[in-house]
Each structure stands twice: as C-alpha cells, then as structure tokens.
Image (cartoon, rainbow, N blue to C red; front, side, top):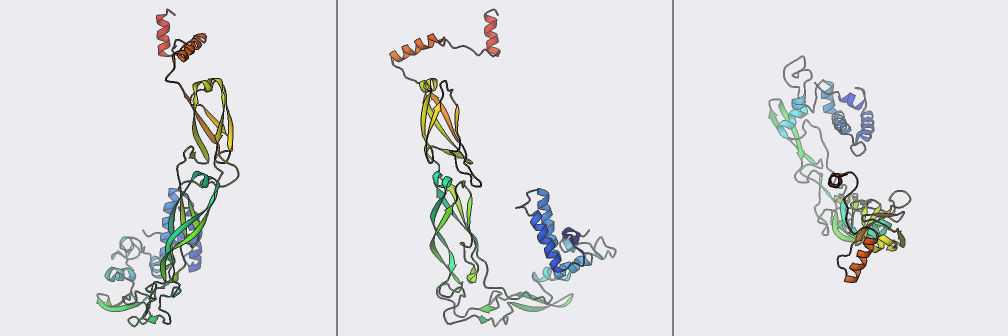
Length: 382
C-alpha cells in the first residue's frame, strides 16, 4: 500500500510548493535528531524527509497522485500495481524507467549548468591548554593551514585579462543529450558534459597561481578567545574561518577542539577539582592547618584533631568557573594518613607507652555482633 505522503506532512493534495516547503520546515525543526533525541522522533524525521523528497518533485508527486509510491520497491502498488484494481503489474513512473536504462534523468528535463562557486568545507584544529587556561579563559594564538581566496584572480580561476568561455561541446547547457531507441520508442537522455564537467563554461587560460581553482592553500595566524570554564573535548566555532569553497565560494567554519593537559596536582571532574594530601599520623591525631595553593590563590584549611584516613575536606567556590552562569565549582581535598614504618628505639618505646595508657596495646575484634565477635564470646563463656 502506498504511503500517504500528504498526510505525513499534514498538507492537502492541492497544496502548493510553498505550502509543502513550509510544512516540511516546521516538522523538521520539531523532529530533527539534534533537537529531539527520542528514537521515535528519529523515525518520524526519516518519513518527513521522504515525504518532502517525493512531494517536492513534480514527477514523483504525479506518481503519488496516480496512486503509486515512487520510493517503494518496483514503484509501489497503485492503480495497475500488484495491489491495485488493474493488477497488470507494478506501476513504474517514466522517470524510473529512464533511470533504470540510462542511470540519469531523461525525458527532456534539463538540470542546467552547475555553478563553479560552491561553499567551502569546515575545518577542525586541536588546541592544547593548561588547566588554568581552561578554567579562567585565555586568548590563544593559533596557526591554520586552509584554502583561502586566490588574490590574483579573486576566485574567478582565470588568468589576468582573460575570461570564462562558453563550452562548445554543450553550448553552455552543462549537459549533452543523446537519442536512443528503446521498446518505448525514441528516448532522449541527458548527461553532464565531460568537456566542462557540467559547468557550461571552460577556462581557456587558467590562473597561474591557483590553476583555475579560485583558491590557494596558505598558513595564517588567528587568535581564538577561549571562555572560562571550557572542558576537554569542547569545540569553539569560528564562523567562516574554514576552507574557502571552489571558485571563491563562502568559507566554511573553523572548529577549535579543546584538549586539556593533565595537571600536576589537581584532577578535574566537571567544574569540581580534586587533590590528595598526605598527613602524618600525629597531625591527623592532633589536628593541624594546611596551606593549599589553589588555581588562583592560597587557602588555609583546618584539619580537626582525630581526622581519620580517607577523609575529605571541601573548599567552597575554589573549583572551575561555570561555563554558563555565575559561580564556581568546589575543591575537594582528600586526606591520606601516613603511618610511620621505621621507628627509633626511643620512638617505639614512647609509642608503646602511649598505646598502653589508652588501652590500645592489644588489637580487638569488632564488637558489632559479627561472626568473629560471636566466636570470641563463645570461647569466653558469654
């Protein structure tokens, strides 16, 4: 059964080309995968594209109006198709027959010459920055190797004092036609002209600088402004700083991809910073004050007496500035308590005496009702 392409776009069968285009644009904005990540929206977007492809083409639309489906295998079953009342075979449009025999458009429909001026491609550049630079932003100099407009011919591709000439093979049409006899009768098919590559014009005297391309490759220096708070892998877009198109076409965009170098002290998770500090056992027991050099200042942090191993201290507002919005992330200081491994005889004696005064000279099992504590109680007759 043929698809209801009009229903997919929500337009009537009498809709004009402009109405079809407006309906397509409205639905595309709503269901585009970049806007709507829902898998069902992705499938809906495919149907919308297919419907616009059919209804914006006069021949395919005519085929739909006759009950066929130009996108279905074999042309789709409308009247005269496998599911239609005629039952005489698949309904195949004239365009499809021509494509099957010749691989190109036929029937007299002219595409016209291809423009020499085309938009340029986007370019991407990797930029390595330190943590301080990504945190607070920086204006970084970059060197770009891209295609730029040829200064000698200004994109025309012709040598000074010369001009484009009409192609003699296709007479400026950009395509050549051939006549063949088929079972349908005499058929005229069109193909791009090989002499002018479909442009309709040739360059008798190419520009000696760009060899007729209208652009040259060169290395140039730019300055990119990196905003505060960017993260590793993010891209900064510089509009129209990419490749100039053939024939001097509009330049594409340049994307600067950020790569953050590892820091000696801090690791980053989003806008939060993390570091590790090793404390002597005595400092953890008695308490102390730490002086920590953050990314932009020095902070005095109090370590309370009796601090346990693997404790974490939080310093508010000393992380990375938020890329969007006000404020900064947090700084987390993870404490590692170091136990001495080598003691002098006097140190060992004093430590043992200290342990006896606290009753810590004998290790005890946990008293939380576990398996080993129950065994101990059983042996002790409890």
